[in-house]
Structures are given as C-alpha cells and as structure tokens.
Image 1 (cartoon, rainbow, N blue to C red):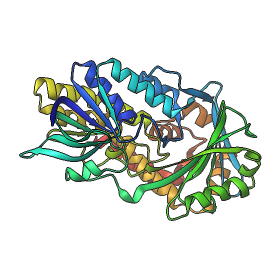
Image 2 (image 1 turned 90 degrees about the vertical axis):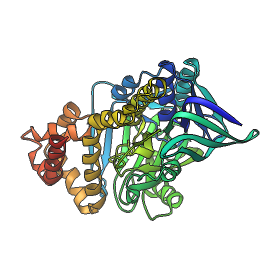
Image 3 (image 1 turned 30 degrees about the vertical axis):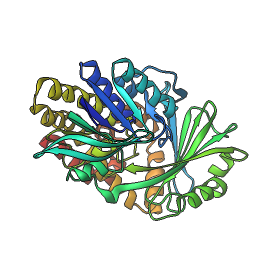
Image 4 (image 1 turned 180 degrees about the horizontal axis):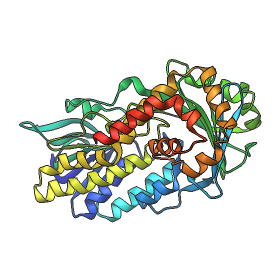
Length: 407
C-alpha cells in the first residue's frame, strides 16, 4: 500500500509536532509518525524552559507545573553561587502534557498523527528522498510518498545515517538519568539547584528542579553507571541528600543529551533535519525545546513551500535561516561546554569562589539569558566587575566573537 502526503514527519516530539503544525497551517497535507504508544510518553526531559523562549513558540495548554526565579550552583567543595531575579524566569513543564498540547494544535490544523509507527527506511527517487517505509503495530508495513520528509527523530539519528548525512559530534552525546519525586523538597520552590563535581556528575552536572507536585532529580555523565551514580548523589551528597530526605521516587527516566553543537548539514533534496538530530540543542545544558522549536517552525514553513509550490530552494533556505539565528550561539556553547567538561574540581571551586568574591550574582541576574549563553558572556565582558572571571574564559569569548563576525 502506498499513501501520499505533502509532508511526512518522523518523530512526534516537540520539534516534529511543531514542524507539522506550521506546515499544516500553510495548507500542506501532513502526517506524523511516532514509534511509541502515545505522544510524550516516555518523557526524556528535565522540563525547565525559559518563559521568554516558550512564548516565542506560542504553545497554549495546561502543562505548567511550577515557576522558577533563580538558580543555586554548588561547587565540588560545597560553596555556592546564587542567582535570583525579582520575577519568574522559567517554567517547569509537564513534558507529557506539553507534547500533547502541541499534538492537539497540529491535529486541529489538519495534521494526521500515527503512533506505534516506526519509520523503517527511506525511499529514493534518483538522488532525492521521496518517501518512507513504515512499520505500524496492528497495521503492518506500508509506504508513504511525500514531497518533503522532516527528520525529527531525536538523538538516535538513524534516519540521518540512512540518508548518508553526518550526525552531531558523537563524543559530546551524554547519557542522562532522572527521577520524578513526590513529597516536599527541602528547598525553595522557585530555585533550581545545580551540583558540580567529578564525584557526582563527571564532565557535566546534577540537578534538582522543584515543582508543584514534588520535583525532578537527575544527572548526566559519561563512562559511569548512571543509576548507581544517581543513587549515590541522592543519598550521600552532603547537601543534596538533606534536600531529598524522605522523598518518594515515583518513576525513572533516561535519555541522551546532545551537546555536540550543530550537525554539519541539515538538509538534502527532499529531506529536512530538525531538533536533536540537527544538533539544535544547547551544549551547555542539553536543553532543546526552545532552539529546536524555533528551528521546527522554520522547517514547517519551508517544507510547505517546497511541497505546495515546488520551491526547491526551500531546503537550503531552511538551513540558512536557522543557522543565521542560532549557529553562532551553538558553536560557542560547544566550545564552552568542552572547557567546562575539562575543568578539574579545583578549577570549578575557584570559578564559584571568584564569582562570589566579585559579587556577580546581580550582574548575572541583570545580564544573563537562559537561552543565549554567548550573549550573557558578551554582556558580562562589558562589566569591569566581571573582568577577572571572564578573563579565565577569554579565548572562548574571542572565538565566539570571531564566529559571530564570520556569520
């Protein structure tokens, strides 16, 4: 059996669904394939998203679980830097409800959603991607012919490889584990806590994110037994274990953080790559909802133009547009992530201690941006108070400025 659509989307996460929403709004006949039983399940995300970034995506729904005004960052030795604003800066979101909210919008716009449907391979017409083969539980195998395929599969990158395209830097893909906990946490309900140190999360960090029903506790690291490391963090960390005393673990979640920056190329004839597979996630933190969502809206718009108007320049235009907005930031974040991941516990202690001595909490509150971290660094460079700290990262900042200029 062969079915025909204007746009076929591989993956029913936020980027795939936002792509489908935008293409459908422009009159394209769209189908989304999600291999899991339902959208949003299982969740793979900490669910901390900036209010400003989420507003840019314009997703209405009942998915907000809490509000965050600040962060407390603990050094390996236990000293902390606290950054807290006089307003809410971020939402803690229920990713299942968030994904379902986007799915509902896409369906109302005319898209079709098929769960339990796994894209098995690509179809080709000469050198052009022209469709997909699908295995759907309960329906068997079938083929989809489509003017445009949008690859929003996430970090697995199977479709990307089958298209013969390069993936984001595999060396900077970090496995992550997280638990959802209930009962009250022993910390402020509007402050996220970040924990650094090779004993607890080598090369990355651990986190506690409170919300209205409890919180999320997790970490990412390479070359360690993650579940064992998380249990150790929750029960033996001198500060975090007190925060988490008596909490009940409701469920475990796992995933992969794509920290390797943008993939070298994210399109070819008939194919657009978006989200984690395109490396449109923040290498500093692993967050991908905002940058992936911004790129997904561009992808849906250009996919509709390619499918409905026969505009073959739309594929390249997608690449140019999202890179123009985000590539400089992502490349700098990748450099900064490498620097942070290579720092010793002593160096991390020094950075936190120096930040406190320089009283940079107010500078970071006024000049920080949750999504655009190079913008934060550049703004701090203009502050005399911050210069002693920023000089420690001068090489990465100069390279960032050069990248911005070249772009």
